[in-house]
Image (cartoon, rainbow, N blue to C red; front, top):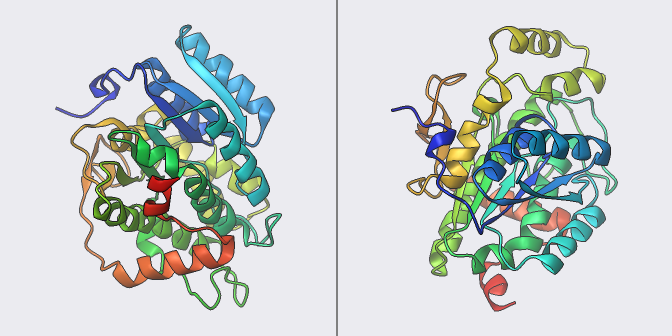
Length: 310
């Protein structure tokens, strides 16, 4: 039978952190997790949208347990502050859903001088995970879910000499690179958890073609290219709903049988119920490069041993 929200087990007593919870897939993920009893930390930059999203979730689930934390993934200082707030009020994270992101936006930089897609999609999440890893590794059977994309198939491993594509920026190519990196993040984290006897699982997911706010944000950012316009128009016609598109990351986060280091996405590639997808491209060198780039750029490590000892 196709996997659906009804397959999510009772999550009472668990704590979830969802980035980008103020809209799109993040809001749909928040709604589903809260509806099953999880306390959900809604980490988001736009606080007005976050409050509106919270009200929408409460309208669907009046007993939902929700908390808003301000998080700007484009600023490492904001990431650290958000992580401090979570650590000060919680002693566990059962589901860390690294969902937020931008797609194919014109070249720009974050507060820390990173190219924005790399900075928001990858480096900001790397930093958040680094800060919150002590809570993750102390939580039995925790999950770290990274959001990839079908665009990862066109992505390449990060260039350690120019991960920001400053020499020849291509918005769509960089988007594919960052989404491949987020898949590699799960693939690389899983053996590191296993090597230290941690039963947490790192799992990647992609939503296929979903009619969320991602495409409209791309256009609003100033990308007036044909692909951006076609994507924006086409997703409204054939894209899945946000609730359906979020099922892949929800399965990655909550299915007791989800495979660590695996990838979950729609059965038909762009649509359909979430299933485990094959991973056929070699990733070891790309994962090593990702770790090197992220550590160098952020000054932060994903050190499982140190997290266990903290």
